[in-house]
Image (cartoon, rainbow, N blue to C red; front, top):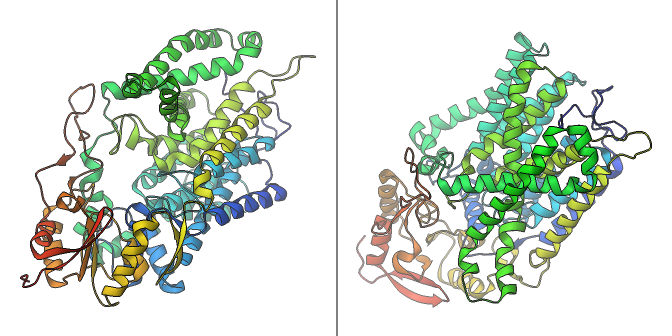
Length: 637
């Protein structure tokens, strides 16, 4: 079998049983080089904020600053994730000051943690020759990511992603160490407990993955004698800290508010990405077809040896690779049908099509679906054949498989299969791992040397990592950024115009005790200026807040009238009532359709607070696409 038992030691044959259950030792030189690489990207991304007036980074910075002021999430302002990240940054701001520098240091801590924990996980999976190249891939991809999983930067839609990834990686490492009976055992138990707590408190997909991984640990462990009271104590200790914190928080903010927030105020149930649609199945088939095509192409120079070693399995792979490539090509054409049917020159069409092939998400999509297929294959295999290496791999695969449920056939942002941002670290490790396992499944025979699997994988991941750095050069250089001095310290912003003008207008027309409201989705000016936000809802864009919170917003605006409102100079100030991007993305289950046809937003709905502002405020100044509103003379309370 292709996935016969492997040893991650550099001198191990990939088809013989392990003689040692210890992972490849962490090389101090490798760790030093990784820390140096992290330091370089920290310096390149240091305090760079792409947008002061809009977006996820300023949104979560502002949320954390409200905790630093003494407010609580779910009770005093809306927060759509578990509480760990907002408390970590909020209490960090209270300790070190609510500044851009403090935020950068706090997020860099978790970025380095993700990189180092990923490296230690690689020592269980990969030969030593691949440790640094795969780490370089992970760092280069995540340091230049635009909207998904990002390292060393504010540019992440919530830092709970990094914290949850660190927790999941720590949990995986603790389980692997426990299964291999590595010493000291207390360290293993502490890693499992800490990793579980962080995962359960960071983001819902990490929480589900942690629960599933613990169940997989029980399933695998029972087959190798890890049973009884010690195992039960370990499981209880893994979930108890998070359970206690949730219970305390529910008591403080109210169970209804906590449940509403953690579930995304309805966001978690409005779409059903796990429900197959026609276009979703098309995308899945294309991803699997691409995986077959890649496997056939990389094995082509050694096809005779693969055929001799794997027999009918390899012949079926080569046969299926042909229709797989056709389906993949058809799917790429379908995604780019507008560009292909346009009158643009051929070179322009190619440029428009490239992102759907070479960006990180489409590159990882075949990895994700191979991981899912392998996961279920290993479950079936484990019932008939108990192998420690199979059980360990099953535990590792559990994390990305469970986290990928939210994007299987679509997502809140797309009707096409996608990659959950939470999966990035695991898939960036498992992709090279699976390719190495496949290429190394054919051993050396006599005078015939082994396939240089590690060298091939190293070249591929280094080339892609270098390409990502070149492609993300605009994020790493300072050409698009200009410094802005704020009450929260110096920050480099890309939207210097009109960001600087609006910031200075707010500072000159308000005092620190005044309220300032940003619509529909911001918080950057609040954070930078230290001005308070009177509203409960921090996002009136891409969210359909329940009625109780809509009325709470109206009540708060009346009681704490903002001196200035910074809004989009567009109808309803850019707000809309709906989940995700405007379009047809609502759940169609149990109907079978080619593409979702239920709207995810209501174009006729206007938030009560928006109607109130439109009636009681007037434009005072316009800066680009933004308008600053002030109370109208004689406006009612």
